[in-house]
Length: 487
Ligand SMILES: Cc1cc2nc3c(=O)[nH]c(=O)nc-3n(C[C@H](O)[C@H](O)[C@H](O)COP(=O)(O)O)c2cc1C
Image: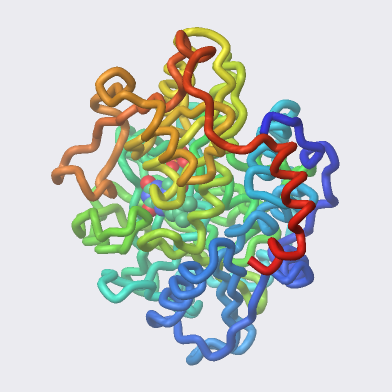
């Protein structure tokens, strides 16, 4: 599992926009078009049915949505398979999900942030609604789950804010609920960089300008939906992966950079004390964990879109969801990269299991080289920027265990881990209201760090694994090939 992959080395020519991405997915057999699906619950239910049926389900493109102009479409699950992730990141086709994780980690060894290029105009200016013309419900915004407090226009999104102190542009994926035609609620969990930036405007007594991009290149979504280091713009990070800068145009009101090829962008501001009840919303851990609460309102004053725009959606639910697989792969690659940057050697794989919604059950595999190596690996994986938020269990296994195979990981835990000796706890780590196990108002939780490696001091005389050698297996498989094929 520790072979370097050639995947990252050869970069595929980037697609121009979401539409070309869709064409490539369709050509690869990775997309299903569905007509006549209602925005009210049917899109959410179909995302659940399809993604619960198959581990790597296709993307769904909802067309001819009842009550909406024929050209308007909604895309679910843009990046939720190994092949679509490879298309998004510009890797050749993988044969195993860990190929993408490894390719990501390899890419990061030479990755350099590439700032966007400001251009005068772009397709996002094809249609502009100003002030009184604004109506965000002109788009087929889904109501995803039965108990949701409203229609959510922002799930697979890219919410852009400028840090007023350090003058850099952050983007995050945060849920955005429609209150009415001209206002939406924005929910950012404590500790998120977007929330820290909003707080800076509040502290200065200034309105916080916001762009909410709800249809765009899925590479931008991979950047906005995962934790990057503070101060690194998601535009620059994504541009580095693309190998070409993203084209941006200035928004009319606040001069914020919006992707020139985006499908739909809302522009507005949050003003001090302007709050409204937001939620409930079925969330990624599989629960309605956070109570409805007063959250900042974004007053929308501009709506920019392409003609026949495509709204992108990511429906959180009891996992797997239409984005949880993608999150597993990205998080795994990011943790691998970060622990190595912190100086760790010997990592042979990382996986963030979908059962833990890619956050709550993360596994790192290492080839042990010294006493304490496994503890160091597990603690780093549990505490690095990508692994820290809303975690629960971090497991470290030896390199003969496949971290993406839950059976294998459980076997290692059952046979190599002594609970009293090998499980440590981290107290008061970063969490938030979406953790169903936390009491209301508490934003930190504990972590169990589970060392499921053979004890280093016994590594040479630890009982041998009882299984046939690869040579014996190969020979017997070849000899009984015909009958084995029938089993
Ligand atoms: C589909 C999806 C929806 C998300 N929704 C939210 C949300 O509503 N609020 C939130 O704080 N984080 C949410 N996240 C996680 C953040 O996007 C993630 O932590 C990101 O790093 C935040 O950006 P920031 O670090 O720049 O603030 C979501 C992630 C994904 C993939």
